[in-house]
Length: 349
Ligand SMILES: *Cc1c(COP(=O)(O)O)cnc(C)c1O
Image (tube, rainbow, N blue to C red; front, side):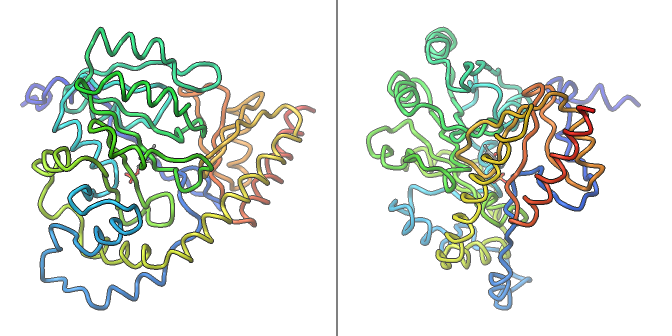
């Protein structure tokens, strides 16, 4: 029997997301926080493993509502924002428009559910190519637009004016999702204040980059009508009790969270300054918890770093000639910088 014949064509041609586990001493490849949240585990004592989780995640949503100044009806919880991207594409369908390079899941999920993708290359400054985007909006009428700002893997925020122009030009045409996964590390204002003015705007957030990647917690903030429609495709118990409980604890401990974020920001600036001093390396300014940098021979540098136990992300095929390093603890960052300098020197001689 040929199983392949039974597979939907869109899936047959799809490649599964590969998250290879590479053994290393210092793991700086996945934009995780180096700081976990063990205090949150105390809350697990009250969990009843025999009962289903709260399908509405009420306690968690109440805290999000407080922190973001929005109503409960404007929040949808997801098993990570990956799942919410799925929900949005299931709810609205395609075409799905997004700039490239960007977060890979917009494309992978669109393809998995058989929706058309419209990929528009960023300009030389890694900003949006507004002219091209507006042209394609007119021509292909995308139902969904995904804008990751700060953008992964480039690290910059897109121009707010350009994002606004896209939102305004699609008012009754498309839903614009501003993916603010890295907003906690950014010095720019996010798009939350604009929600009340634009019904087609959706903000996506996650706790993955601020310490809870292992628990899978993300949420959408949007107009009630969008939330209600997306909620129809949500599986009832998508957010398990453990995740709800620890996430609630994390959001209650704003001080702990904020101090970790501030430390990561100051370490990011330190790494950036150090990278700039290294001959043959060009780092790109970042508003996120990682830095993209250009290096003469990226493949060799990647392998050299790994030999010294430091795992970063090789951006070959995405941003050729570049590596992406996640900001770690001060100690991890020192090890990374020292290893990189050694690798680069060897390359030269
Ligand atoms: C990491 C990342 C996410 C994924 O977040 P999860 O909540 O872990 O699914 C979403 N968007 C961008 C841009 C990311 O880099």
